[in-house]
Length: 312
Ligand code: OAD
Image (cartoon, rainbow, N blue to C red):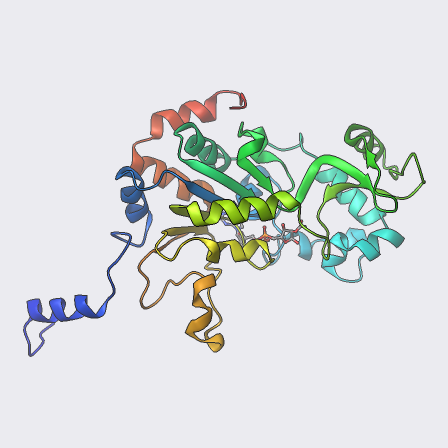
């Protein structure tokens, strides 16, 4: 292509219009280079249901395969009712059946989970914030202090009436037998500590978000539609010059253009003026494998995948 001002001059002119890039390229290569150069020592990882799909647990919102398209057997007025406290109070059976199916122990951690553990073994992981209730991060051997279970998990259970704690193991046994866990003190319904819509997230989510996000020197977001808040808002809580990588089957977390540029701080910017948001469109396991290869971490990664998970 010819330009009246000459090719070199045109490129120099164009470079001036484009703000300086923080990542050398806005893809896995750029992120690998950032890590290799020693600039990423406090990596924050954000995880959603897409990361567990290859273990056999469906995500929520993928059309056709997602849980919300496959809830016929639970007889719900609308899909999200499965995580609705009012609905649970009158008809606990739907959630209890789902809980029985999803209980940890029935599924294996994925390569992407082991990648997060590898980041920790390398001393690079500040925190892993997960929306998932499957505890596969722990199963991959990540220690509890590195995990923030933003939407809870099955490690605890409590009565929804009087708040008394219940033994999670006996709750599990009751659910296994298709029973209805109830409170030994008041007879109220007992549910595992999964955060339902309208319920507060654990305090740990807010303290860790407050302390960790400003310290992050790389954000890696894996397998989430970024539609549920406050979790999705974490993307905008890292500093403005912190690189962010999205590994997902579809592009998510973009500002609605009708809101205008003032909103863009809280979202990815994969368009004009992007200096730091890298995108890998595809499966989590493929994305992390490519990143591992670019980092020359293949041997350690394979060793982790092949050995049983001892908690760090
Ligand atoms: P969603 O189901 O909303 O989004 C999953 C995302 O992962 C979608 O963008 C998929 O395209 C993508 N995806 C699916 N499989 C993938 C794969 N193998 N590799 C890469 N990407 C893949 O799940 P979440 O964002 O986690 O709340 O949903 C957030 C919350 O909504 C959940 O925590 C849950 C739900 O209501 C509670 O459980 C309380």
